[in-house]
Picture 1 (cartoon, rainbow, N blue to C red):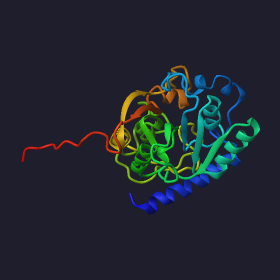
Picture 2 (picture 1 turned 60 degrees about the vertical axis):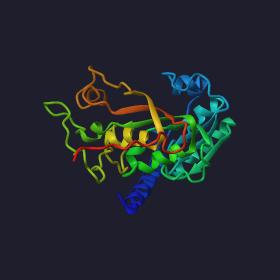
Picture 3 (picture 1 turned 90 degrees about the vertical axis):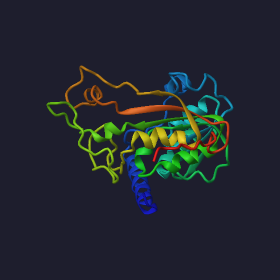
Picture 4 (picture 1 turned 180 degrees about the horizontal axis):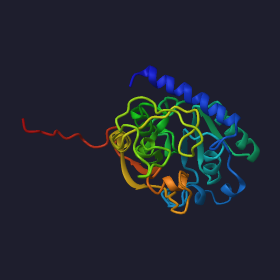
Length: 272
């Protein structure tokens, strides 16, 4: 994937998220009081963070919007939030000012963390966003560089099958209509909870996501598929589609104790 395509996607999605903030769309609504009362229950119901992250340096990556940063700051963590959209980051600034929360705000793309020191963060929290870039190899290498040895990288992604499958139900269920090895952006859609109107999205294969995280210098410790299926939901609804296709996956990965490359490489000899 060339740099020009990467740049086009970044600018397109920056503008799209700025518009979503102006329209007060989903994912642009700051944290509420209930979210902050028991913040770890809100963001870590399955206990991946170990129960106490007070004082930890947390990077909320591609996580603007005034929600993630505020919740993690409420745990006592030292929070930095990164996003490509200045409008999304303005919501973080507003929440921080209203609630007297200390949050560092940085405008940059998720694949450019050059302003941060090596091993600067104990934990990197990365909500769904890799779908907005055509190439995600550098995202993972940058995350690995800024995560301390033995630090955590918790990320969520759209399942490739969900991005391939039709939004509308057929007599046979939700059929695959997009190729797995697609290289360009997906066709735009409107009015679905599964995609964000106006954004440019890309299918990333399991190899690119799972393999990319491992090759960058992490061990995967756990993997879950957040459950949204509802057998009683109306046809063509979000809950109905989720009975056939899981929309998201969440990955818990731990940074290798050695630097950028993890374990010594092994030579593999194949028969001629």
